[in-house]
Image 1 (cartoon, rainbow, N blue to C red):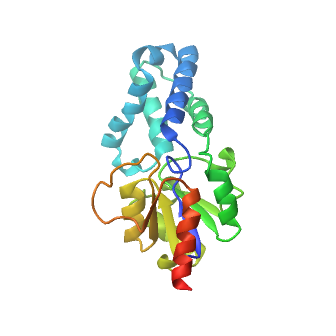
Image 2 (image 1 turned 135 degrees about the horizontal axis):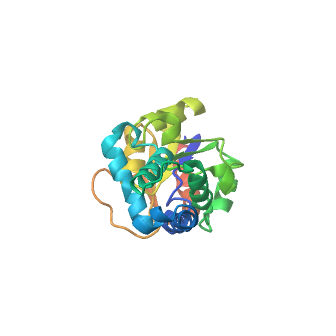
Length: 231
């Protein structure tokens, strides 16, 4: 029997890349007003790509999206000739916009119904804040790669969730859009897995999820079927 459900966030509960692009554009506008040499030297995409240089120099923080973004901004400031730079102010602009997401229509009603029957948790490699997004009322807790020091598909986040829930892995189902991070990671941690395939992608290969759904509302049908088999 499934006793708890964990969810990925970005691209599972909302479309993340339009949000990130807008956040990066707003950050670039902020930089243009306060640190124009940075905005003149780097496009929004080039600022994002500086994270590659940061990871090369500091691979131990590769899992921490917040720290990577801040270090990339510090690097851009230094290369643009700024000895002093308000990295916290810059990141605050980005972070507020990064959390201004638009939930897929099926998300809120489905989570509310499921939360009446199961403890729900979110497990994310990103740095979304469910309090800012307005989903903290449906999740019993939320973990991300920054919290646990490791990103999916590594097992640490799944194991931390299992301990918080106080359940066996087989009693938990993980739901997410990424075949590697969510499906392989969840399966190797012993969870059941559900692949959210909203855009009808082909399965990339390897062991498949226990179920595949096109939207979150279909998850309730999957759970009901599993429950009927175990009755």
